[in-house]
Amino acid sequence: MVSFNSPLLSKAAIKALISLVLLSAPAMAANCKLIVPKHPLSAKGLATPYQLTGGCKEAVADNQAFVEATILNKLTGQLYVYSPLVITKGTKPLITPVVPHLPKHAVVGIWFGSNANALHLVDHDGSLKQGKCVNGIPGSDFGQFAYCNAPAFFEAAKKAIHEGKLQVPPLGKAKGGRPCPTTRAWEVVDQDQSDNLITEYLQQGARTAQSTAQNKKKKKNAKGINNGSDNALLDKFIGPTLNCKPFLAKALDDVGTFRPSLGTNELQAMLQRKPAALIPSNNPMVLVNGKKNLRKVNAYRLGVNQHVAHSLRGASAKKYCWRFFKLAPPTIHAQKQYTLKGPTPDPAVGDSLFTFLGARYQASFTNLGCDKLLHRTSPITTVTKDGVAIRVKFGQSKRI
Image (cartoon, rainbow, N blue to C red; front, top):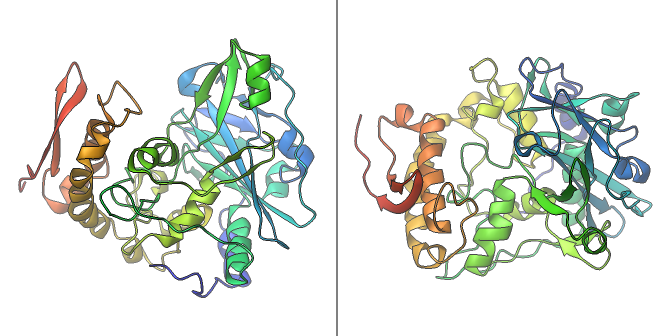
């Protein structure tokens, strides 16, 4: 288990690493662009809508972008969450966003997710520098993921934990007696771990609004839109099915409610038993022109509160694949009696949570190139009907 008393990265080390990744050049193949408002870490900046552009529209499902903030009060250790709104450039919000009341000593981290192939943050009057925003490394974006000020947020949060101000709830026991999973559990991760958000918006026509209880009452015909992600899969499907509870924080945009976020998920993931799943060097989001790149691996890891690697060997793709091969299938199989009754996150992939997880694993094993690295076929295979997984088979791996 990771100790909360483990040494923190020095400020100099963090500054040096961040300096390598801030203000990265535009991606060569970015599909969508998102204009970041001025002073994004301030209350006004959080409440100012981000503008989706680059030929993309928030009303188009596979264009949609999402933003999520987690805020720490350094003095008290209390956490808050807030979902800044994304609108299509040229439109107005369906309902004006709530202006959050930030604590005096707030440290704000912001994360971005997209349903498009890629998303690139665009500057507006110095907003990227003001927010310490990271698209990737110069010349190479992560893809669907980006962040602003995340390393500073996590360092402040770990300091608050060390000082006893911030208490991260224990994982608890899942049905069947296993520890509740986190975003770093092998049975939860896929080819792109920790890459998207829990944030939801309301959409009506071409316009969007924050998904709050008050806004839902005002716009009863608006539909919810969301970001497919490991985080949402864990908090909305796997967790409830296994009787596990996520780390919640007070919502500043929805009075009286508490909800999880990527930030709270990644803090709770520090409790994951070793070996924990950390971004490997062959993850598609950290490759540069198809090649492994240590700078990009660490740029990503800094954004999701993972230990930096000191070499590519420290982010070994083969070791990651071997653990994925050995550790995930037994847990997925052991939880079958519960997940088989769980709702599927995507009816086009699997007809239950269990078959969805099986199909997702099988695809990830191939997409990560684990078959080539290990010279084995996936230990999980599925039987499909009309393209939908209806059965899952284990122990079918063969040497290739």
